[in-house]
Length: 350
Image 1 (tube, helix red, strand yellow):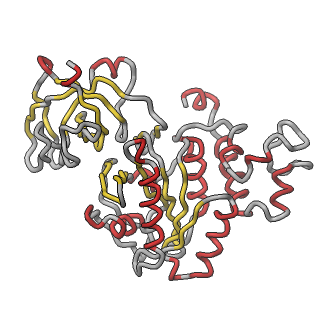
Image 2 (cartoon, helix red, strand yellow):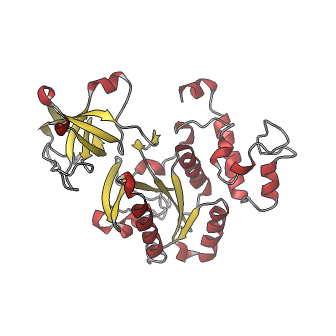
Image 3 (cartoon, one colour):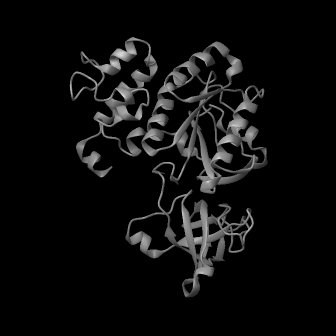
């Protein structure tokens, strides 16, 4: 029976079907995808498989049944080939019988076990939105995801790019100044990807996502770093300065980086942040999600210090001495206000 079980990673899910890469099984090559559906008991337990989940597949057996594949979803058939064109029925040979423990998970985009978040900030066109980036860092810290700051389009305004880099270097983040258009700094970023991939091969894989405001150049960066993926990129509208992206669902792509595999998550949901709909972070825990605040928590004069205006606040003292960037503290105050505005009944549902 054990020989019939397969462990793999969910690479995408469409219409109740899941494509699973059996990367932990020597019987399959790295390009194989198996089509599976979730065990019925997961629904009773209110559990939904997520892209990025490490799962165990069991043969469908007598439960094997024909399911309709939605038109143009690209869902694979039971042999692993992608099915495109007219919608129809396909035999599902596998059932997801177990979901391994998750390192982390997110509501939107629905994604699990992410290792790295590459927060992309445009130097110009559109103007950099540091609040959006700071929200991403908060979410990543709360989920145990390592954030890397990528300042893109640096060649458009090098002085501005360096100022942004100083903000996040001061906060303790790894920062790269790049231009996916000209290639500036891209070799260094590619080298970093090889480095983290080789270091984490004991885990079996390492995953990452590029995120940021629309128009920041995420798709262009990914296409430059992973040309084999041929990801679609959209131009920035001159009127709205908002990028256009055609991706409609989360998908993991396996890429070869150095001596290992890097799993790239194409995640349109990271461009559309609605902070109060993400994992809710209690207001008293929010300071801990700003890593430059962490070593000062508990050192303020008042036990319930909000770190916004109180006398004797250790964080405000560090801010006044230049140890915290003004934009980062302003983002903290803004996020705190947003969290406080969430009604109590809604907090209990999060």
